[in-house]
Image 1 (cartoon, rainbow, N blue to C red):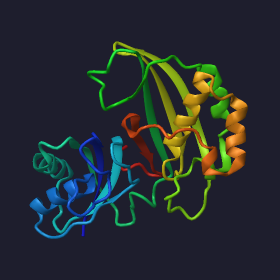
Image 2 (image 1 turned 180 degrees about the horizontal axis):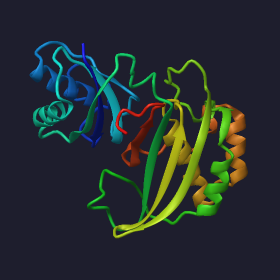
Image 3 (image 1 turned 60 degrees about the horizontal axis):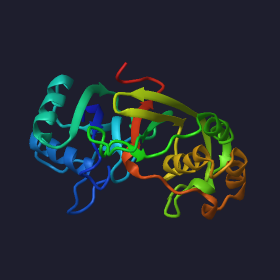
Length: 255
């Protein structure tokens, strides 16, 4: 069966997350339903990562197997037609070999988190950022973020329902920038690793925001990491500001 890699963008607000759930709106379920309009049968697609309810994607990657050899551009156009009016778009589609696996072939996952800092309610960015009313200490957050880099036991920053076999992960990058936008200053968190624990990025950002306000010191972040205790984590930030921004492969099918 011909295999295709799909690059997918979506707004997470209407969905319970990526993963298909019975009688609930999911991104996976919507795309599988669109595939069934093209080839009437049960379809199962596999994604690079399972985003939670309310989390967005700029470049989620999934693969699907078809019975017919489709032209990749025509397949993406047909899927986008049947996905309307849902906020899901197939932004690229490529034929790939049978050994390509959207999840297991991935070598890097990159997340973006956006915090908007302004007192007036967000309008254009509503549902797309975590809005706070105060400024943050950028340098203090950067100092604390540096303590998280490398290989650690991240139990503190792991959801209690996380199903990963081990809490040990290697964090490759956690960069923070202040970006001036027409809507107000934003803080962008660029987080990269081969894989993540459940709620790990949102736990990082929630704790770093505490550092940014001065409620925590960078040393408090080190103590939280060393505690290996979920109770030591700062507040987990809301999902609205989180985006799956990129998935890296040794042989990028979209290059």
